[in-house]
Length: 211
Image 1 (tube, rainbow, N blue to C red):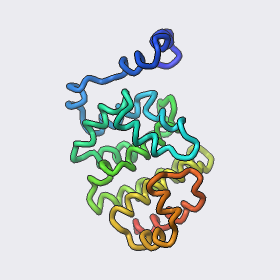
Image 2 (cartoon, rainbow, N blue to C red):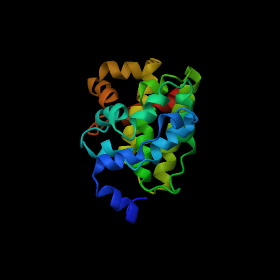
Image 3 (cartoon, one colour):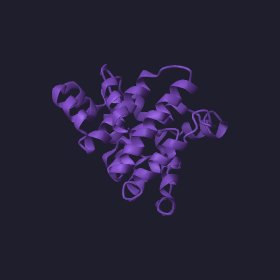
C-alpha cells in the first residue's frame, strides 16, 4: 500500500525492485478469469503511469506500456488471447464503482477506457455486443460527470475515442461520412489527441448508433 513503511522501503531500492515485486507469476495469470485479469491490471498502482508522460495524448504511451511495462505486459499477454477479453473488459467497465475503495479512481477509469480501446479487445465483440458496449460507455460517461459533480473534458475525450473506434470498426455509415470530411477527427481515432476540440460530434453519432 502506498506510503506505508513497507512501500517506502521497497521504493528505496529503485523502481525496478518495485516493478519486480508487483509481477504476478504466469502460472497464476493463466488460471485467472478474464475479468480477474482486467481487475488485476487496474489494481496496479502503475497501471496508468503512461498517462502522465504526455500532455497531448495518452494513447501512444499506453499502447506501448501494454506490451512493455513490467507491471502490465504479462497481464495483457494473457488477456489478449482470451476469446472473452472484450466482454470481460466491458463487464468491469459497466460495474466499476467510481467512489469505491480506489487510490486513483480517475487514473483507473481512464486506464479502463484505454484498455477497452485496444483493437485486440473490442475486436473480439460481436456487432450486437459492440452496440451494447457503446451504450454502456455513454451511460458511464453521464454517470461519471454526475457523480463526480463536474464535466470532465478528458474523460469525454477518451469516451469519444473509444466509441469512435468501435463504430469505425463496423463502418457505421454516419461516422464514416464524418471522418471522410474531417481529417482531424480521423486522426483523432488513431492517436486520441487531447487537443481535439470537436470530438462531441462523435458522441452525437454514438447516440444515434445505439438507438
